[in-house]
Image (cartoon, rainbow, N blue to C red):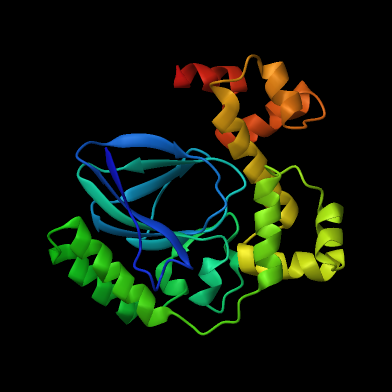
Amino acid sequence: MSFYKIIPTDELKPYIKHFAISESSQQHIYKVLPSTKLVIGFQYKGFLNSLGNNMQNTLATAGITGIQNSFKTFENTVVTGTVLVYFTETGFTYFSNLPAHELFNQSVSLDNIFEKNKIEEAEEKLSSAASHKDKTKIIEQFLLSQLKERKKDKLIVEAVKLIYQSNGLIRIKELTQKLFISQSPFEKRFRSLVGTTPKKFASIIRFNAVLNDLEKAKSLTDLCFEHNFFDQAHFIKDFKQYTGDTPESFKRLLE
């Protein structure tokens, strides 16, 4: 399986973190771990299936996935190709009036968000595009056609920044005090723009910080307390929710 990252055009950089083109000539079953970004996928070759609860669900060839509360398992058919769009943490709101939290734990067809004929037009162009650059340009044109005038919510952007700076350890009460806003309106604005609650967002950032430190950690006990878990039981429970494995098992996979 190959995975190519591509930086968006300057006009889209405030809203799109990066594009990626994923291609595979063989069938694979793989996990996708929780992240803080909404993702659009355009399947230009083959199909993707979502696996879970002893069920297999074939995904739409153009779909969007919101922030997830746990890992997801997917299976690609033989010979697949996908253009992926990774939004910035508040980027989705500049393309749709749908509150981002309505996509939490969801993977839905893109025609629930955008006009079906526009999606089909982009898919038709993708099917004949020869290069990665051409494929990316087609999706950029599609996104630019959907771009809306929105006032930047500087408070929520600052909140996201502070949560990242703390590696997800900042308390929501401390966050609202720093931002001079009461908790209820803050959480409402945050959920609508980012796609989940600030508490869950911080939890996912902490989880990814744990993953970054997993290989170099002296011990799992050190890792647990460095990232401010109450005890190892809570640490293992959260880790299994996000990965499906214990920290020990996951660490062995990295070796």
